[in-house]
Length: 337
Length: 256
Image 1 (cartoon, rainbow over the protein chains, first blue to last red):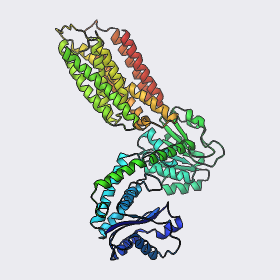
Image 2: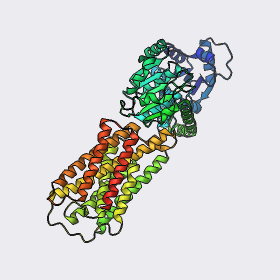
Image 3: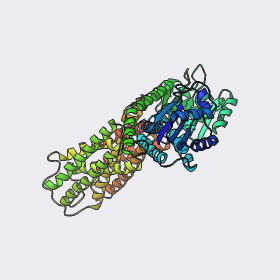
Image 4: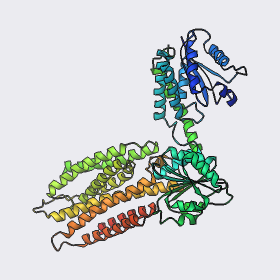
């Protein structure tokens, strides 16, 4: 009896290959069912996300993971180059790999948390389909425990690693919770959408979008569930804003000190955070001199994101130690035998 | 005497520990509740020490420099414990602890506590209420000033874009600090109001310089808070006002 893991991910295979092996929700159950219907496979879990497809199986004899790779390629009718695209792990290595995946250490964005839920979901589906037994049940339960421990005992998920995430982090430093806060996005491009989405995910309720082309503002507003404001009227909205995101393609400053000065009294001098993610800048740096205004440009946000990424990488050694210790402590059949 | 002073020493050591452990926790970027626990224990020791002095005096222990400093340290700790948990600003403890420590060190200076205390034969309730409420209010106003100092630190870091280190991570948000500053100051001001009313009700002839200075302080705080709540003020100006007013009134009272 042997524990094996076969997989490919964003680090080993290009998108053209990954998409051949990606499995949608419905196909996932059929794949797991087919996997365990083979007489050499005793248990199986199939994990498929946008960046990876992985097979965890308990096999009985045979050449194990090589057979599994042939079986998978055959099912996907894949006849191209395989070398280097797939990774193979057996026994303890497979268990440690699963722990790394569940902890977000193997993700494109180091330490991201979504993968934990995806692994849980994949396991649950296999469990409900009767595809797991004692080995994989124990292994996955342990991996979930390790994932939680890694996240609570290290700083692997701390700090924002994207410009949008850094904007949210700063807004929270000024306002605490963003529930009920009012946001305006000037510009209707991709960065505006990402940042507005990130703020919404943390509770910002009122999102306004303004753009020189009103149609574009309306499209983005509709997409994110916000309200489009004509470009000629954005200044009036400034009096009740908490966060302003500027990301236009304008060659000159759009937001100037006099815009804020005009509404300070009306705002009762409440804090206002301004995020300028445009190049050339949209917000005159002098706006940041106003006492209650906290102004950040793209360089600051990028620096924050880079710093967080570096800090997360520094945590990897600590995470590996936790994984080793936890696997040592556990009595996992087909892993520690 | 030895047992009584021991409580002051214990309270002082605990306040120092709260500050040191808090700073260490900040350096390791893990702001825990250690400062809160140390301050809670210090609060217990302060109560024991105040009980000792109160028993000696047979009235509210505010008869000498040591007692005033101790009472003020107690009041400051009390408001910190209430506010720190209400606003979840445990970091406030790291900033409060040094002030509590300093006040208690002053009370430990030889001679700060009168040795031969004569127990009071009669008590004037209004005078007792006036002095104790006034000192209690200064505890709250001191804490508002401490929150103001925290605001300066965080505001500087956010404005200067210095995000490294545990301090910025452990701090509450700017909005929460402004809210905490204003609310604590209102509580302090309301208690001071009660203290002044009690002072006005003291037997005639007792309306001294202290009460006049307290009344001027009350007016200045009223103006500052009035402007903040009615017209609005940038956080930095509120923090400046609260810090300057507190230090100024403290200096004036010390001179009297």
